Length: 248
Length: 101
Image 1 (cartoon, rainbow over the protein chains, first blue to last red):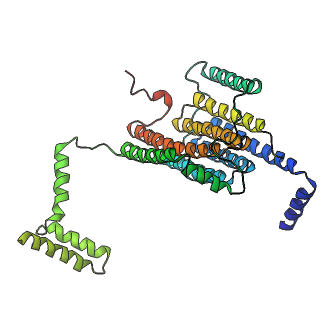
Image 2 (cartoon, each protein chain N blue to C red; image 1 turned 135 degrees about the vertical axis):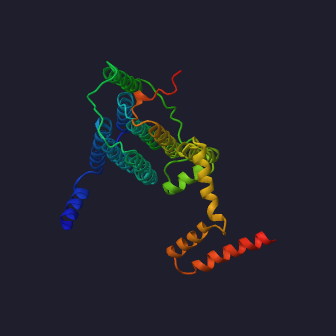
Image 3 (cartoon, rainbow over the protein chains, first blue to last red; image 1 turned 90 degrees about the horizontal axis):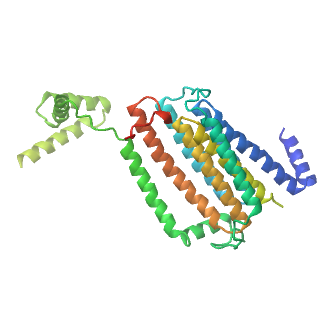
């Protein structure tokens, strides 16, 4: 199997012109990208959509490699397929929305033909404008060469830490804001609806702090049951510390 | 030699169109987020293509920043989706009219 593959690879690299290898890789990965994207849109189950998204992202990573950009391909796979899609799957599983959506149901009449028409019009316009007009100035390497004797990672890192240092710091702030926002959004609202229930909960919380209550003894026993090594000494020393503090 | 940049840009345009169509057509909020990711990836592909054609590292740096923005967007967006689900049991975009005046 491996020998056959090796022979085939050798034949390919010997007899096939390199440009045809590029064409083949581009065609296959473009087909993967497009079929994955269509799968994301038409899949009924959100889990299937997420897996199709992974397929598209891998295809894009291959296209990055084909354009001599291996570092961003690796980052694409690690961040997108490894983090973002896993986050999607976590939320899908957490919410239990793996039930299927009825695609055939169309609540707004005429929405889909209108959407298809608008998107087709936009894409046609963009492709047409790209053919007839010059959108790029053609100014070469404004912010540093993309190819050179150094590696791709060297060039990218040098540009990020010199030319684009301030945007880089701004992304750090953006990530902090996103984390704080996620924590605030995911926090449950306080449930102090019934004042009697909250008072009871408060007394239950205050109970183990008092060493003279019988509840404290049961708590110490629970500690001994959980880990038997030195737990009695620990709890006794804590109580001794309490009494000493109370005495002074 | 490598593929002409036109093919990459055409692929990127078609990918963006599919993502936009998904956002317009689908009603599940999670799938709409995934379609937004498709559009961001289409933009990334054209950034890398222009970085290669113009021999400019700036396009690749922008892809880096787009990745960061996508991660932050997904974190906050999924937080909002979870918060909505805690309040009501379905998350189709048609039902989310709590802020309607």
